[in-house]
Length: 130
Image (tube, rainbow, N blue to C red; front, side):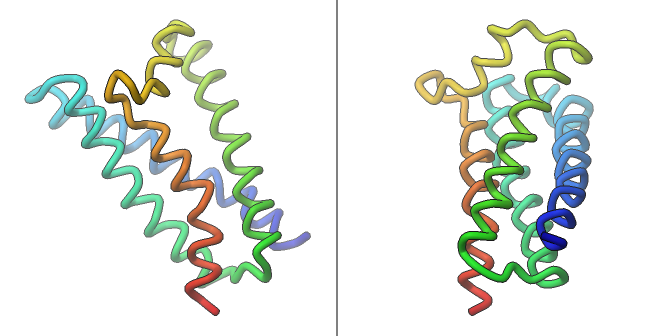
C-alpha cells in the first residue's frame, strides 16, 4: 500500500511535466508549425519525458508485481483523465468538444498515445527490472 501511495503522489510530477510540455509547445515551436503538427510533436515529447520519469520512479520505488503495476496505471489514468477534463474545461476554459477532439485518432490527434503509454509504462518497467 505504501508503494501505491508514493505513486499516487508521484502523479503530480507527471502533471508538471505535461503542463510544462504544453507551455513549451505554445511559447516555442507551436507558433512555427501547424497546430496539428505541434500537437503530434508535443505528444511524442510527452511520451519520452514521461517514460524517463516513470523509469526513474521504478528504479527508486520498485514495483513489486504486475498487479501493483496495473493498479498504479489504473489510478494514474483515472486521475489524468479527470484532471484533463476538469482543468481543461473549468480552468483553461476549453469547450467539451475541444477536449474530446484530442482523443479522435481519425483526425490524427494522437494524445491517446500518451494515455496508453502512461497505462503500460509501469508494467513495462516492472518487467524490464526482472
